[in-house]
Length: 140
Image (cartoon, rainbow, N blue to C red; front, side, top):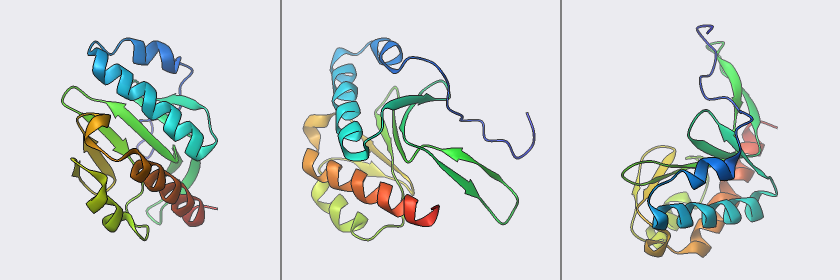
C-alpha cells in the first residue's frame, strides 16, 4: 500500500450481510434504523468502507500535504462498546444540536452512542443533513 493511500476504501461487501453479523440483536436493529435514517437524509444507498464502516455517498479530498483519497459523506460503525457515527465536525449548529442530541460522547468527527433509544432521532437527521451539506461545500 502506498504511503499516502487511504486504508478505508469502498468495498463490494454487502451491507446487510455485514450488519446481520452483529451479534447483539438490539445493536443490530439500531444499526438497521441508522441505515434508513442516513439513506433518507443523504439520498445515497449504504456501501461498505473497509471491513467495518457503513458509508453513504462519497467525496474526494486533497490536502496540501499531498495526501488525497475518497471518503464517505457520512458513515457509522457498530463497534463493540458503542455505535460510532462519522459526521463532519466544523459545521454551524453542530455543538448546539449535540446539546439536544441525548446521551452520547463525541470527538472531533465521531459521535458515540450506545443505542438509538438514548438519542433524539430528529436531531440525528439534522446532524446528518448539515454534515453532508458542509462536506459538499468543502469538497465540491
